[in-house]
Amino acid sequence: MGLHLLKLHKLALSLVLHVFFAIRVICSINSDGLALLSFKTSIFGSDGVLLQWNQEDTDPCSWRGVTCDAHTKRVTHLNLAYHRLIGYISPEIGKINKLKLLALHGNSLYGTIPPELGNCSELQMLYLQGNYLSGIIPSEFGHLSELENLDVSSNTLSGSIPSALAKLTKLTSFNVSMNFLTGSIPSEGALFKFGGNSYLGNRDLCGNQIGVACKNELPSPPMNSMLPSSGFHRNKKNDSTKLVISAVATVGALLLVALMCFWGCYLYKKFIKDDIRTLAMDISGGASIVMFHGDLPYSSKEILKKIETIDNENIIGSGGFGTVYKLTMDDGNIFALKRIMKTNVCLDRLFDRELEILGCIKHRYLVNLRGYCNSPSSKLLLYDFLAGGSLDEALHERSEQLDWDVRLNIILGAAKGLAYLHHDCSPRVIHRDIKSSNILLDGNLEARVSDFGLAKLLEDEESHITTIVAGTFGYLAPEYMQSGRATEKTDVYSFGVLVLEIMSGKRPTDSSFIEKGLNIVGWLHFLVAENRSLEMIDPQCVGVQLESLNALLQVANQCVASCPEDRPTMHRVVQVLESEVMTPCPSDFYDSSSD
Image (cartoon, rainbow, N blue to C red; front, side, top):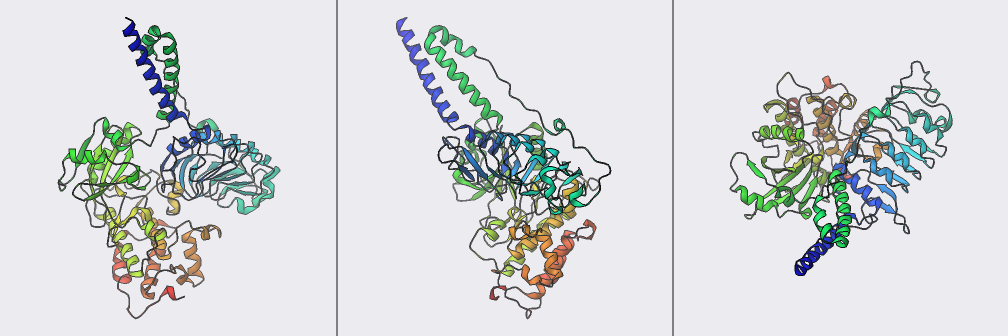
């Protein structure tokens, strides 16, 4: 009996040690770090800036974009501007109450602005401009008594400007332009000193600051109608510990405390949708492989075995729908594996339906989907690997230079791929997110359109409009920003922006445009009006031919026409590119690098 009790003591003690080790790993980071990890899990795409955010660190002070007070280790600055963040702003950010700067501008964030930001009482600078944020401006911002700079421009915010903002006496910069705000601008307090430039592009605003008399004011939507409810439900099951407690009272009590802490940490991890699971964990609960066309000489077992070996070191990209990994088979063939986390049953069924269609779509200028792996927690899409990376990387991040002929060839390839989706594919496909990071290049710098299969597929000619809002700021057509309704012509607009980006080497939201209150389309119109269109060309681009340049500018200008009916079809774009842009007069030559 004594020997049996001793073994029970050892077993309980061993379990306690394992539990406390797990607790130390999961719960060691400070409160600011936990809030930032919650923010990370609300972001579904980025340029990789969040990959170094590690839950096992004791504090987040070494993480990219994060600055801390040297003595207290509390986070004071969070700067993640222009990092291609896609997702929503977690309310947990409001718990970082020593924050002085929050800069999330120039991304693709959506959803409402969390009112919990009003808890950051020491906040001095708040930059949220250039996203897809909707809903109202929280009245809780009136609690930010130290706020000096507030910019929420170029979003889709609605409702009125809260009167509580008039209490922000330290404001020196204020911008709510290019939204859908309504009603009267508070005429007293801090906002009176800001003129018309702070309110541009809100057609239904009125007030003394913009010289528009108010008639019928529209009230802000109620806060409780804009914000989702949330809550945690604690599981109080502790039946599994009763035997140990009855046998070994002291050790059992300790074990119970440990298990409760561990269970709380587990619930936290579960509800913030932990995104650092390895692919081996994804498929550990069972997975199936679906291959299209039967043109790969690998068994399901071979593919699953290789997937199990992939970790974060194999990450080659991150997009709006998931992380992309490099998968190398034993015979040297390389594939790209896109991991899409399952968040609900409806999403799972949506992708099943889309993948059935994707498996039948093959074209020279589209990235080929070879198959997919279906696991309980994710879908892993298997694509051809393209050695040239993305066009975004080639234009903006790598040292290699793309000459004029290469750029024209990329434009033509992207146009042909998009034209196939619009006109020759059955069912037809609206991409909805044409941008340079979704144009991939092979080893010969030939273009392939990617991520098209993750857009809304058209079922028939009558259902030619989708109301699912997607896309990336800077590429979106004006009517799409207004209504959220996508057609082939909104893709054409995005393609026109892409052409301008390729020609100029500048991103659509380049800071040089923003400083002048423009985007790349506005810049084009300005240069054309000033007869300075040659300034559109990337100074590093050599071999530019004037005739093809002028023809391409005309194509781009038509594609970004403000009226959708004035834009050409992608079939027409391909025809003009082949007949007027790709075959210019060889004697008409301009070398931009010589300027």
